[in-house]
Length: 391
Image (cartoon, rainbow, N blue to C red; front, side, top):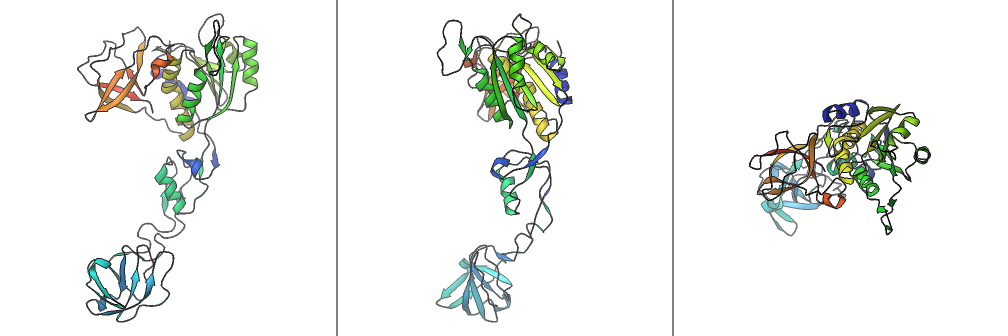
């Protein structure tokens, strides 16, 4: 059995950053920008008012001024402010020619077309004070969140060049499986792993471009995979162990994949297979849903991150206290990493290990959002513990 750290290192060593594509702003959310986005103009593009008030010559403050017009956002005053004159101005509007200060309306008294002001701070946003044309607004390598997308829109980058999403296909194996909308009969069970994998891939920014179900025969599994679309990552649910009806390893070998490891020192999730064929990568995930969830978060999610970004991201590790009312999982000869529910209580994380009856207990995963590595000597309920956040 390969240690967890060595297994993850093997997976990430075979990941390459994917190519690029230009997409509209909305679907670019959470994608990685692959080239610097530059300002196409100064911002603001002109001297603009920072307040609702009056634009005037500073030298004329303190005397009655004649109101000669209005400047508002999107509709600038076209004339020039001369001696003894002022212009009503609104936030974001261009400061008219001739004016060298803006006074907020609270510091002005207006009677008809006559205005008297007291000059205080100068409420003008100067041209280019936010950024100059040609400056980097969003750097290459940035993950595009809502703020970054807004910044791109402000400089006219409406189809940013971003990393392509990892293209994934999924094969679920098992004679016993029926779809969730069917009622199992006899030895049948509903297929929950396909839903789990689809949701996990979407959560981690990958595209599920193909899905198939194969019964437990080598020929059927090989034919099903061959029909799947072009992909970066193949995920096989089930058949990863060494039983008479476990065909994941033989089918990967038959398809020309090289197997890099076949078991991990992990509980739950020992029978995990990782393989590659050129730049295509493949996992055979142990069939139990809990093992699926654990191995995906430990190995597949970091792989998807590196494919998209080219960077090996360290899993987010936090510290919390164990829920004193929750039973602790037992120790095992393998490295135990247990699904938990992390909540915040009185400003601190609290970890509740899930009461899983077995690794096949899919309903026991409800609420899981963290993984708790268990030390060899067990857990002390009174001491803080380190856990892995699983978004």
